[in-house]
Amino acid sequence: MKKKIILGAAILFCIGSAYIIYKFRTFSAEASTRAINTGKLISDVYTDKARYIPKDKVNVKVQLNNNLNKNYKGSLEIYFKHLNNVVLKKEVKVSLESKEKKTIDISWNAPLEDYEGYLVEVYAVHGINVDDNKNTAVDISSDWTKFPRYGYIAEYPEQSKEETESKIDWINKFHIDGLQFYDWQNKHQKPLPGDLNNITKFWKDIANRDIYFQTVKDYIDSAHSKNMKAANYNLIYGAYTDYAQYGIKPEWAIYKDTSHSVQDVHSLPSGWASSLAVFNPANKDWQNYIYNAEEEVNKALKFDVFHMDTLGNRGQTFDYYGRDVNLPDTYTEFINNAKKALGTSVVFNTVNRYGLEQVAKSDVDFLYSELWPSDYPSYSSFKETIDKGYELTNGKKNTVIAAYMNYGRAGTPGEFNEHSVRLTDAAIFAAGGAHIELGDTGMLAREYFPNKNLTMSKPLVDAMRNYYDFLVAYENLLRDGLTDNKNKIEINGINTSNNGKQDTVWTYSKEKKGFEVIQMINLLGMRRPAWRDDGANYDAPSAQKDLKLNYTVKQGKIKDVYLASPDFNGGKSVKLKYTTKSGGDGTQLQINIPKLQYWDMVYIEKE
Image: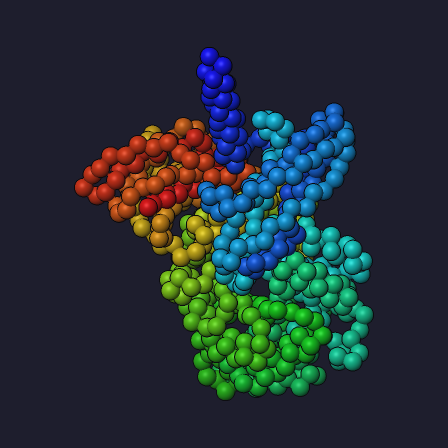
């Protein structure tokens, strides 16, 4: 009898232990997908750098602020996830008195795999209760040009190193891995005044703003400390109209007539230092002159990139000798020669895609197009531009889009419209691109970057944090070798389109080995397909719940179906319910979509 009692107790103990283990495992699995974001314990989660290389030490900073009105004792559970797979879990005990603040550092040795994105989920827990949750993301990429996330610096006043570092810290929280230093230079033909042995403390830029050398240098150094690259901005063919004083000859210029009597000049406001005379990018003397000027810059400042700007279509132009000059045909050679001469990365702005075909043939590290609604007015313009870039480079080069939001509203102080900004980023990110929009002044509203009339509301800042986390975490499903498969997509009872038409859900699908990816961008209730929202007055699209998505997988066995969105759950992947039916075209799926706010991404993992 005693043996039976002991045996029974042992069985009960084993069952109990198994139940505890089961509950722990269930909780651990659930914790990686549950959305408990109270903000009462975890105030922020971010990485110490914008990008890491394989085997780097990744530091995740968790800022705690106990607003529970009582002391707290529990744990932080940290999940490092690649797509839906947990690659590492860490746990740290924490205790905070009421109102106490502290920062916890979590380290992770990055894996060997290059060019992969990870979501980092942080949960505050006690017992089986989840008290708070906040996420960030990690990009493991040895070269930033594989997944460029471009930002900007536009102001260079006399300021402390600490203030400079604070602004870079803010930019870093969006994982921006390259910065365009806009209008930092003195004169376009001579960016640095004086000589290398006597660089002045400050100078005037073209708008007669004060530019402080130490501030420029501090921004570059601070950016480098975060693994961000610094890009030296200049026109490829611009000089002040006093160019003759610098040994520049009119024989190198571009003209509007065949008798070199009317030089091409880009007019600027009367209060500025000068308008800009235009020179021939194909002229070897001009090339040597401007390359030497940029080489002087790189001796004084540690720029990593030459960002080449243009002025778009200049109409019919001629060289000094009356020969027709098709400017785009000069771009490829100018870019390649600049890269050889300077030994840096190069980026080139194809304004409204003018010269995109020629630039795509060159040695640029990625493509960059400033789009204007005169020619590219709709959300679908972004996907068309990004797709064209992939087509021209055989899928090798990603695209950054410059698209200035709420432009018409930016003449006077106000706020950006959160809804139109989110939809524009959804349209760009879903297509595999990035959007240059964030920098030291906040967000861009005009092509003149120092314009800062429009500010970002806290909800917009929070949304952008989520969108950039999402861009990083899912970079391998957004911008890493996917191709359109043009599969038919339907949503029961919902109007859909494949071209971003207003008052529809814009849907399309792409695929790569092991995955098919469906993008859903919500334009329901939108009165027009225009992305810029000049009046900054767009309403939110009509949110949807419990949708039935119909899609056919033509080849391969389905393993699981997931949804991820930057609009909820902190971007976490959630496994979806679905039904299947075999048909002549493949496996027909009906997928349950719990909700759609601005942008959902459904991905199908295949065996």
